[in-house]
Image 1: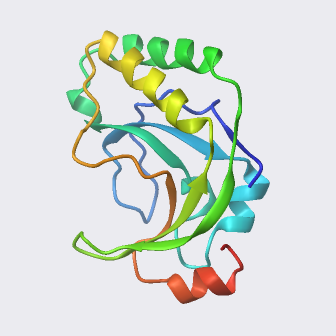
Image 2 (image 1 turned 135 degrees about the horizontal axis):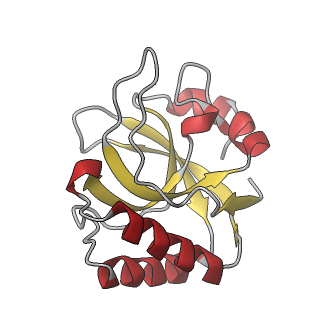
Length: 156
């Protein structure tokens, strides 16, 4: 994975796709290039289109009072941040939730500062990102224990 792109960082978006649950969450996220996402995705896991690194989870999209102000704030932030170079640093498993989550660790030295400035920009617009968890840069591969598949795919 060479570079995460900021061009798709202006949700909130509510997405409905045939065969998938309705996604009503709002987030600011970085997405890998199409080629990198295709190379990283696991068969029967998250699709390449779904792979991302969440920078800020904003809760339900309907709880965001002013989508236009949010979009403008994120776009202004994205224009101040250089592309974020990142590498896959390993494979991991989150086990504290209802189901295990297999993920790729993302090593991006400039990401913490970029995320900090994003959080400040969001708070300045009155948007309070979720503080339920700390920030662990990662890309979810599957909502299941797929560690052996991820390791076999030479992700880490």
